Image 1 (cartoon, rainbow, N blue to C red):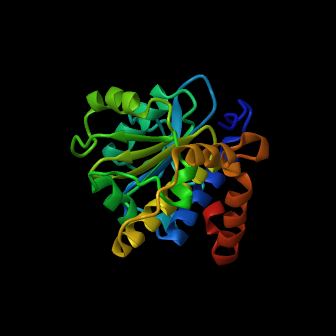
Image 2 (cartoon, rainbow, N blue to C red):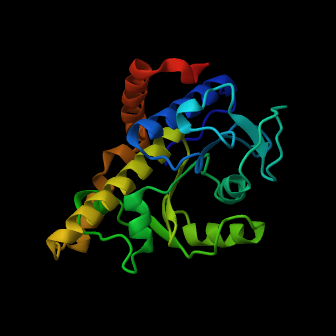
Image 3 (cartoon, rainbow, N blue to C red):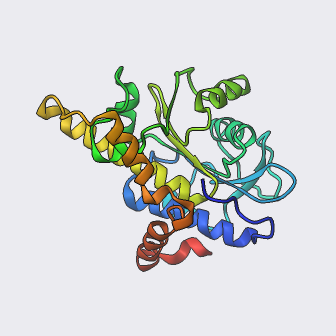
Length: 249
């Protein structure tokens, strides 16, 4: 995994990066009205992270209206905006229970939710799924994530794997940096899209396990020595900047 943000990383820079991520999700269509979340930990001695204010669309999120909360969901930056309890319950459990989970992303895309509802789960037989060999975890559906006692079970289900399929629910990814988490989620999302599209064509061509393991080892976007997803994330930020740079406000 990529290294965590340095302790001296400026919170303003993290706010801009996270707000840009919300706009990227909006651009890619990874939205669910006002629901779902991307959270980013603020370096420091306390577990404190940034989350979108409840009620705003992703294309309305800005650096200044992001809300800083603690693991109990308490607002700690003086913001008057509220947050979604289902957001901080799931995300705070992962931030607190998975040491390298400095960024957590959760989506309900059609393809991702369809695969999450499939008894077979993610098929390993496409280019993107092969790159996730050994990186995918599953967590059984327990209803809307409002209860703190589910948190330890989510962490146990994850078992250190960054691509998570929440059964009957959706997708989740985490990483030591936001770009790393994005690289994982984008790869998982593409794998699900191809699986769903290919289902109409009949049986797939199997990929041998040894080839999948090699593909996973060779997946350069997950290599922290090569930026851990930073190049592709920055490219999308440039695209968002051309559309609407107001997320920086």
